[in-house]
Amino acid sequence: MKDMEVTVIENREVIKDHFLLKAKVKGRIPAFRPGQFVMVKIQGPQVFLRRPFTAYECEKDTISILYKVKGVGTRVLSKMKRGEKTFILGPCGRGFSITERELYVVIAGGIGVAGVNLLIKSLKKNVWIFFGTSSSSNLSLLGNLTNYDLFISTLDGTYGKKGDVISLFREKIDDLKNKDVEIFACGPKEMYKSLKDALLKYRLPCQVLYEERMACGMGLCFGCVVETLDPKDPIKRVCYEGPVFSLWELSL
Image (cartoon, rainbow, N blue to C red; front, top):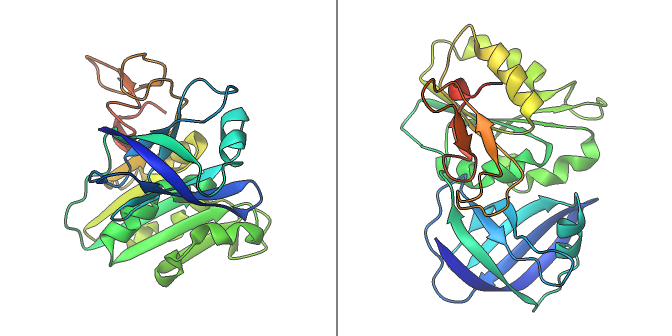
Protein backbone atom coordinates (compact mmCIF):
# COMPACT_ATOMS: atom_id res chain seq x y z
CA MET A 1 0.00 0.00 0.00
CA LYS A 2 1.36 3.38 -1.02
CA ASP A 3 0.13 6.96 -0.73
CA MET A 4 0.69 8.29 -4.23
CA GLU A 5 0.75 11.92 -5.27
CA VAL A 6 -1.17 12.13 -8.54
CA THR A 7 -2.00 14.72 -11.17
CA VAL A 8 -5.38 14.65 -12.87
CA ILE A 9 -5.04 14.23 -16.64
CA GLU A 10 -8.74 13.62 -17.40
CA ASN A 11 -12.02 13.82 -15.50
CA ARG A 12 -14.85 13.56 -17.96
CA GLU A 13 -18.54 12.81 -17.65
CA VAL A 14 -19.25 9.48 -19.40
CA ILE A 15 -23.00 9.64 -18.89
CA LYS A 16 -25.07 11.85 -16.64
CA ASP A 17 -23.51 11.93 -13.13
CA HIS A 18 -20.95 9.21 -13.98
CA PHE A 19 -17.31 10.29 -14.39
CA LEU A 20 -14.05 8.68 -15.48
CA LEU A 21 -11.03 10.15 -13.71
CA LYS A 22 -7.52 9.38 -14.94
CA ALA A 23 -4.53 10.46 -12.90
CA LYS A 24 -0.81 10.28 -13.50
CA VAL A 25 1.16 8.91 -10.59
CA LYS A 26 4.31 10.57 -9.36
CA GLY A 27 6.77 7.72 -9.11
CA ARG A 28 6.20 4.04 -9.72
CA ILE A 29 2.67 2.67 -9.47
CA PRO A 30 2.40 -0.50 -7.35
CA ALA A 31 0.86 -3.68 -8.75
CA PHE A 32 -2.92 -3.93 -8.38
CA ARG A 33 -5.07 -7.05 -8.30
CA PRO A 34 -8.51 -6.75 -9.90
CA GLY A 35 -11.06 -5.80 -7.25
CA GLN A 36 -8.64 -3.91 -5.03
CA PHE A 37 -9.52 -0.30 -4.29
CA VAL A 38 -7.97 3.08 -3.58
CA MET A 39 -8.74 5.83 -1.09
CA VAL A 40 -8.86 9.20 -2.84
CA LYS A 41 -8.21 12.45 -0.96
CA ILE A 42 -10.87 15.00 -1.86
CA GLN A 43 -9.23 18.40 -1.96
CA GLY A 44 -10.90 21.33 -0.19
CA PRO A 45 -12.50 21.97 3.20
CA GLN A 46 -15.88 20.31 2.51
CA VAL A 47 -14.73 16.68 2.89
CA PHE A 48 -12.53 15.30 5.67
CA LEU A 49 -12.40 11.56 4.95
CA ARG A 50 -11.04 10.00 1.81
CA ARG A 51 -13.43 8.16 -0.52
CA PRO A 52 -13.00 4.53 -1.68
CA PHE A 53 -13.13 3.56 -5.36
CA THR A 54 -12.26 0.30 -7.07
CA ALA A 55 -9.32 0.60 -9.44
CA TYR A 56 -10.86 0.76 -12.92
CA GLU A 57 -7.64 0.65 -14.94
CA CYS A 58 -3.96 0.63 -14.02
CA GLU A 59 -1.25 1.28 -16.55
CA LYS A 60 2.44 2.11 -16.26
CA ASP A 61 2.05 5.46 -14.57
CA THR A 62 -1.69 6.13 -14.61
CA ILE A 63 -4.61 4.95 -12.55
CA SER A 64 -8.29 5.40 -13.39
CA ILE A 65 -11.52 5.27 -11.44
CA LEU A 66 -15.07 5.26 -12.78
CA TYR A 67 -17.49 6.75 -10.27
CA LYS A 68 -21.02 7.97 -9.80
CA VAL A 69 -21.81 11.27 -8.12
CA LYS A 70 -23.74 10.33 -4.98
CA GLY A 71 -22.88 12.94 -2.36
CA VAL A 72 -20.68 15.87 -1.41
CA GLY A 73 -17.40 13.98 -1.80
CA THR A 74 -18.00 12.68 -5.31
CA ARG A 75 -19.54 15.98 -6.35
CA VAL A 76 -16.38 17.86 -5.31
CA LEU A 77 -14.28 15.20 -7.02
CA SER A 78 -16.24 15.65 -10.26
CA LYS A 79 -15.15 19.31 -10.33
CA MET A 80 -11.42 18.50 -10.40
CA LYS A 81 -9.68 19.78 -13.51
CA ARG A 82 -6.74 18.59 -15.57
CA GLY A 83 -3.48 19.51 -13.85
CA GLU A 84 -4.88 19.52 -10.29
CA LYS A 85 -3.09 17.34 -7.75
CA THR A 86 -4.27 15.07 -4.97
CA PHE A 87 -3.28 11.83 -3.20
CA ILE A 88 -4.43 8.25 -3.81
CA LEU A 89 -3.76 5.50 -1.26
CA GLY A 90 -3.61 1.97 -2.61
CA PRO A 91 -3.84 -0.81 -3.43
CA CYS A 92 -6.24 -1.58 -0.55
CA GLY A 93 -8.16 -4.71 0.40
CA ARG A 94 -8.34 -8.22 -1.01
CA GLY A 95 -9.04 -8.51 -4.71
CA PHE A 96 -10.43 -11.29 -6.90
CA SER A 97 -8.66 -14.66 -7.01
CA ILE A 98 -8.27 -15.96 -10.54
CA THR A 99 -7.74 -19.64 -11.29
CA GLU A 100 -7.66 -21.34 -14.67
CA ARG A 101 -11.22 -22.13 -15.81
CA GLU A 102 -12.97 -23.20 -18.97
CA LEU A 103 -15.30 -20.21 -18.75
CA TYR A 104 -15.63 -17.04 -16.70
CA VAL A 105 -18.94 -15.30 -16.14
CA VAL A 106 -18.92 -11.68 -14.99
CA ILE A 107 -22.12 -9.98 -13.81
CA ALA A 108 -22.26 -6.21 -13.40
CA GLY A 109 -25.16 -4.12 -12.23
CA GLY A 110 -25.01 -0.47 -13.33
CA ILE A 111 -21.93 1.32 -12.00
CA GLY A 112 -20.81 -2.13 -10.76
CA VAL A 113 -19.06 -2.42 -14.11
CA ALA A 114 -16.40 -0.14 -12.61
CA GLY A 115 -15.52 -2.89 -10.13
CA VAL A 116 -14.98 -5.64 -12.72
CA ASN A 117 -13.40 -3.76 -15.63
CA LEU A 118 -9.84 -4.54 -14.53
CA LEU A 119 -10.86 -8.14 -13.83
CA ILE A 120 -12.28 -8.63 -17.32
CA LYS A 121 -9.15 -7.20 -18.91
CA SER A 122 -7.11 -9.70 -16.85
CA LEU A 123 -9.24 -12.68 -17.90
CA LYS A 124 -8.83 -11.81 -21.60
CA LYS A 125 -10.70 -14.82 -23.09
CA ASN A 126 -13.66 -17.15 -22.54
CA VAL A 127 -15.60 -14.45 -20.73
CA TRP A 128 -19.33 -13.94 -20.73
CA ILE A 129 -20.41 -10.52 -19.46
CA PHE A 130 -23.89 -9.90 -18.11
CA PHE A 131 -24.58 -6.19 -17.78
CA GLY A 132 -27.79 -4.78 -16.37
CA THR A 133 -28.76 -1.14 -16.27
CA SER A 134 -31.83 1.05 -16.20
CA SER A 135 -31.82 2.27 -19.81
CA SER A 136 -29.93 2.16 -23.12
CA SER A 137 -28.64 5.66 -22.34
CA ASN A 138 -26.25 4.05 -19.83
CA LEU A 139 -24.56 1.63 -22.22
CA SER A 140 -21.54 3.92 -22.56
CA LEU A 141 -20.49 2.63 -19.13
CA LEU A 142 -19.32 -0.52 -20.92
CA GLY A 143 -16.43 1.40 -22.50
CA ASN A 144 -14.41 -0.95 -24.70
CA LEU A 145 -15.88 -4.11 -23.17
CA THR A 146 -18.10 -4.46 -26.22
CA ASN A 147 -15.52 -6.82 -27.75
CA TYR A 148 -16.57 -9.57 -25.34
CA ASP A 149 -19.60 -11.90 -25.35
CA LEU A 150 -22.22 -9.58 -23.94
CA PHE A 151 -25.67 -10.22 -22.50
CA ILE A 152 -27.49 -7.00 -21.70
CA SER A 153 -30.69 -6.18 -19.88
CA THR A 154 -32.38 -2.84 -19.31
CA LEU A 155 -35.14 -2.19 -16.84
CA ASP A 156 -37.10 -0.09 -19.32
CA GLY A 157 -36.54 -2.48 -22.21
CA THR A 158 -34.84 0.09 -24.44
CA TYR A 159 -31.97 -2.34 -25.17
CA GLY A 160 -31.49 -6.09 -24.79
CA LYS A 161 -33.72 -8.11 -22.50
CA LYS A 162 -36.27 -6.13 -20.51
CA GLY A 163 -35.82 -6.68 -16.80
CA ASP A 164 -33.00 -7.07 -14.26
CA VAL A 165 -29.66 -8.69 -14.99
CA ILE A 166 -30.14 -11.72 -12.73
CA SER A 167 -33.35 -12.64 -14.53
CA LEU A 168 -31.32 -12.55 -17.74
CA PHE A 169 -28.57 -14.64 -16.14
CA ARG A 170 -31.12 -17.24 -15.01
CA GLU A 171 -31.91 -17.95 -18.65
CA LYS A 172 -28.31 -19.13 -19.17
CA ILE A 173 -27.71 -21.08 -15.96
CA ASP A 174 -28.48 -24.47 -17.49
CA ASP A 175 -25.77 -23.82 -20.09
CA LEU A 176 -23.22 -23.58 -17.25
CA LYS A 177 -23.97 -26.67 -15.17
CA ASN A 178 -21.53 -28.99 -17.02
CA LYS A 179 -18.77 -26.41 -17.51
CA ASP A 180 -15.72 -25.60 -15.42
CA VAL A 181 -16.92 -22.09 -14.66
CA GLU A 182 -16.34 -19.34 -12.12
CA ILE A 183 -18.66 -16.40 -11.61
CA PHE A 184 -17.69 -12.88 -10.56
CA ALA A 185 -20.11 -10.08 -9.74
CA CYS A 186 -20.27 -6.45 -8.72
CA GLY A 187 -23.50 -4.67 -7.94
CA PRO A 188 -25.95 -3.78 -5.19
CA LYS A 189 -26.74 -6.06 -2.25
CA GLU A 190 -30.19 -6.89 -3.63
CA MET A 191 -28.53 -8.18 -6.79
CA TYR A 192 -26.38 -10.54 -4.71
CA LYS A 193 -29.46 -11.88 -2.91
CA SER A 194 -31.08 -12.70 -6.24
CA LEU A 195 -27.84 -14.19 -7.55
CA LYS A 196 -27.46 -16.45 -4.52
CA ASP A 197 -31.02 -17.67 -4.92
CA ALA A 198 -30.42 -18.34 -8.62
CA LEU A 199 -27.28 -20.38 -7.89
CA LEU A 200 -28.56 -22.41 -4.93
CA LYS A 201 -29.32 -25.42 -7.11
CA TYR A 202 -25.84 -25.48 -8.71
CA ARG A 203 -23.54 -24.04 -6.02
CA LEU A 204 -21.10 -22.74 -8.64
CA PRO A 205 -18.03 -20.87 -7.35
CA CYS A 206 -18.82 -17.19 -7.20
CA GLN A 207 -16.84 -14.18 -5.97
CA VAL A 208 -18.55 -10.85 -5.36
CA LEU A 209 -17.18 -7.37 -4.79
CA TYR A 210 -19.02 -6.01 -1.77
CA GLU A 211 -19.38 -2.24 -1.53
CA GLU A 212 -19.87 -0.44 1.76
CA ARG A 213 -19.26 3.00 3.21
CA MET A 214 -15.70 3.25 4.53
CA ALA A 215 -13.86 5.64 6.80
CA CYS A 216 -10.23 4.57 7.13
CA GLY A 217 -10.03 1.91 4.40
CA MET A 218 -7.35 0.03 6.33
CA GLY A 219 -9.28 -2.10 8.82
CA LEU A 220 -8.76 0.18 11.80
CA CYS A 221 -12.16 1.78 12.43
CA PHE A 222 -14.57 -1.17 11.86
CA GLY A 223 -16.90 1.21 10.03
CA CYS A 224 -17.60 -1.06 7.06
CA VAL A 225 -18.40 -4.46 8.54
CA VAL A 226 -20.52 -7.15 6.90
CA GLU A 227 -22.08 -10.25 8.44
CA THR A 228 -20.85 -13.60 7.16
CA LEU A 229 -21.67 -17.25 7.84
CA ASP A 230 -18.34 -17.88 9.61
CA PRO A 231 -19.52 -19.46 12.90
CA LYS A 232 -16.44 -18.34 14.87
CA ASP A 233 -15.93 -14.83 13.51
CA PRO A 234 -18.99 -13.74 11.51
CA ILE A 235 -18.25 -10.01 11.34
CA LYS A 236 -15.76 -9.09 8.62
CA ARG A 237 -14.35 -5.74 7.56
CA VAL A 238 -15.12 -5.01 3.93
CA CYS A 239 -11.97 -2.91 3.56
CA TYR A 240 -9.63 -5.50 5.05
CA GLU A 241 -11.07 -9.03 4.78
CA GLY A 242 -12.82 -7.88 1.56
CA PRO A 243 -14.03 -6.19 -0.51
CA VAL A 244 -14.09 -9.47 -2.47
CA PHE A 245 -15.89 -12.34 -0.75
CA SER A 246 -17.23 -15.69 -1.80
CA LEU A 247 -20.95 -15.32 -2.38
CA TRP A 248 -21.40 -18.44 -0.24
CA GLU A 249 -19.78 -16.96 2.86
CA LEU A 250 -21.99 -13.86 3.00
CA SER A 251 -25.11 -13.69 5.15
CA LEU A 252 -27.57 -12.12 2.73
